[in-house]
Image 1: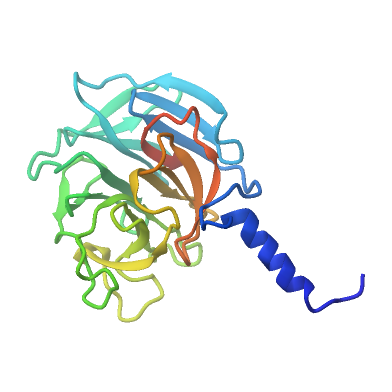
Image 2 (image 1 turned 120 degrees about the vertical axis):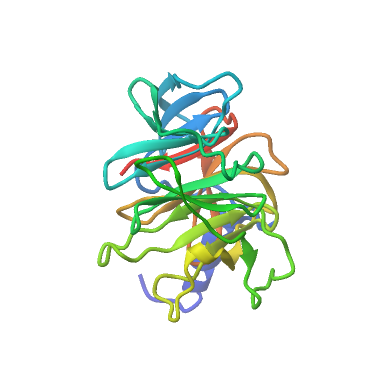
Length: 287
């Protein structure tokens, strides 16, 4: 076929229309990858789902071992051990048997300081092998995966003085770390701010000099998801491909939907409804 200079522009426009549509809303995207996802529903069910067919539940088991009124607030894989961990509303850390749903306590509940609020980001730092816990209240903690105890109470979350949202109070409710295949000591901590509807970095990108550690609690805006504000979010990044996936409920929706998140721009691309669309308390990509 002969080259025509207008065709690349038309193709780019067509792709943009498929992904974003006329109103700038994220639209259905071509299937990508086949990551195995684990999600915890607010009804205490552990769901196994494939990323390319998010509305189909492969496995469903009920979590065992929670006390009356206790809720799971986040899950993530400790990739170095291949074990799924969970954190509950009481501050109790658990390991999770994905076959049976049995929760095994790790140490005793974290009470000093107690978890503040109801929505949290929970993710392993693969470089330090510590767990990052952040909340909409700006709480910023690190937990030890062997003991469940507080490893550090870091400064509260806040936007950098040079950031476009420097005068805003963050409401971070989901977090995830990247994996560097060339240097396991390097990682970047990403997070989702529901109030701004944005992807942010907690600390600077791993290739930035001078570096700002996530431990300092300083946030840097990457970009808007293109969805407006969202009421709930669960977020993870695959260890091999660094593919970022988020389960979100926007303020204009009542169902949980799965999105690809572009870590360079923050843009969200809709993959489909997650399971039956029930609210999700945590999301983890199986390593």
